[in-house]
Image (cartoon, rainbow over all chains, first blue to last red; front, side, top):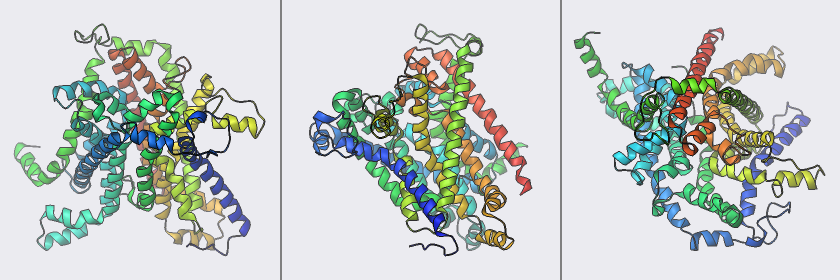
Length: 281
Length: 300
């Protein structure tokens, strides 16, 4: 555990802790509140009670979504889609980022700018042409269509991010490897990629999240109820807000658990792995 | 470049092209083709009445965008929304990073908990905050009434209240990104610089402006430009918190207005033209912003 510096006066620490604790409480509070709503018994969903966790807490809502609603199916579907997107996202971003970092090919700068430019167009307007094209390709209302759409969502950011990280890895390592007779492809896989692990983890996390947390595209692409992912399912609860507020909250808590766990687990990597191409290179 | 040299260039960089090809194929399907489609549609009369039999009508839709007052009002609103959000994201994010960038017992716990809003899916954040802003049962009004004995605020039924609600929600979910970037940037600043400043008797405030701020700048600039682009185009929060622009379509920024036009009124041509305008605005902003910040880079 870190120690207090002796040179800094105590009152300063008191102020720092006071600010940190206050901000943290405000930050965490909405999350605790959703958890509290999910524990409320059905007859007191709307309450004017101030305690976030209700007195007569119950896990009924969780029982209902798992046993009476197809929540488990949605969970499974979201997991399948998100894992596929993660695999695709990591393989595409790690290779493309490497090309942008190490090669001076024609169209390199234009490509990098095109990647940021993709972020500037309102996503909502991409929906209609995307929808028409997926029908033509016969992947409308399938996981494949969803995986294609989601892989592209986080990709520009991830490529930038990977490129920025590769830029921090000294090129001399690859030169040494090539002198030793290692091919360029092998150098990439065996030497550079392992060194880029923190950035790969971040890319994986963002790819996973872009699939796990997205509602709008799924609403356009998926019609078949058996293919519903978590956001689509949760939205169903939310449309009957009065009666199923508790179910929504319980579902929301379960949706948050994996991403929150990943973030908590990876928070240290997040800081070292996220360089946004800002380091000069 | 002549053909032989071009062929040599291709051979030389064959691997690079192979590496980027799959990414651009996927982006081609999902972003580039739909983008070109939109450019075409923006010159057409495509709408509910002309869904399949649409024809090109030139600049008509663009003229409509610039003729109607609603564009200018929404543009100003969007600018305000973007500025307020990004301002608070950066100020809160960087301040927290500065507080956390020192030996402090429990630092890891704070850092981890403060990242949480980033982890929560946006649609859940938005719907949950909508519940918190509920007039009768929402936590904020209950708190105002029971603890501070103040009258409740009309959050979601009042235009200003709804906009404030969406902004508060978005500030909550956006500051962790800036905090993480700033923490990363702070860690890369060599400690010796501060030690030297200490020896020279520089006060903390001065140290911040002469060491921390300039060295943090190259890290924050790309993050801020991304933040501006994302906030400008943040559909989820404004749409879900205000439940589709309520009350009476007063809570819109440009993107949510486009969505309303296209998916509720089926004005495809108009929506596409407006989208292109949004795109050009952001493109000009980014080019300008990056060029300006590059111009000052030589100073340090």
